[in-house]
Length: 338
Ligand SMILES: Nc1ncnc2c1ncn2[C@@H]1O[C@H](COP(=O)(O)OP(=O)(O)OP(=O)(O)O)[C@@H](O)[C@H]1O
Ligand SMILES: [Mg+2]
Image (cartoon, rainbow, N blue to C red; front, side):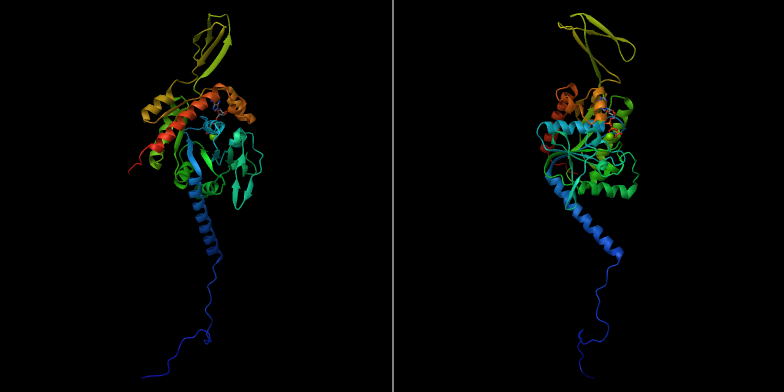
């Protein structure tokens, strides 16, 4: 049986015209989120290319001086003429801007990117403290929201070209370092800060195990608050006795000018070094206990800035020189076959 062949012609059709389905508000939001995620990923890759070295500063225990050390490393590197950035990833208690005396800075935003603040020694600084209305109010962000905020925080900052980026974390090895380790490509390694006390050293083990889990090398251990040096003058070439931390007298001999100095070990001695040896990771050096560091932290002038030739500035320079050696040998090392 044959009949007229009917051709489908949408123009003639008097049935309902084909409609392009409208995306729901939910779908639109999802799409926008996906695009933002993609853009961020691209920026992360770009970041990885634009920044020479990316170094995480971690500790197992709180209050051992991570932020002080992270800031000191960044300032010491910057003092050598390197372009350096510091990223304060402590979103619940960000304190790097306070340590650098740049708390009240308004950040510049362009093309959806935040430009970091300028700190001493031309340091580029980014911290959640700049974005919080009241930095004294603790932020409680849990689970995925916190992770998303951190990713956004890293991916949306316009660092430009940098020789090194130092990343400071809250204590421990939980969400923050894990998110950064998984989001930011080509991280060079971690610096672990410890004090000579046993408990701090014990906690450092966790950081070292964490480095194995995320397959990011430990560049080395820094022992902070290592010893406290006291100085004085007396009769030349005589003996001076002071009461040490354990209540036992300690002797010092004055030189021809009558000057004497003694380094008192407030906690234990050499713990950071022996821990590094035990874990088979480099020891980058120790930093003395210096009450000026506490004052500097409160006044917003790091000891390296106020006393560029002082003991602590020199100790930081030694740590940085060891760190640079480690970074060089990391680069020369053949890729690990997993
Ligand atoms: N070498 C040092 N000599 C004297 N005081 C120091 C030294 N290093 C750090 N401090 C002081 O110890 C306190 C804690 O330091 P800091 O905030 O850097 O530690 P943190 O490990 O970052 O702490 P958190 O775990 O809370 O982030 C501060 O008051 C700081 O000034
Ligand atoms: Mg800190």
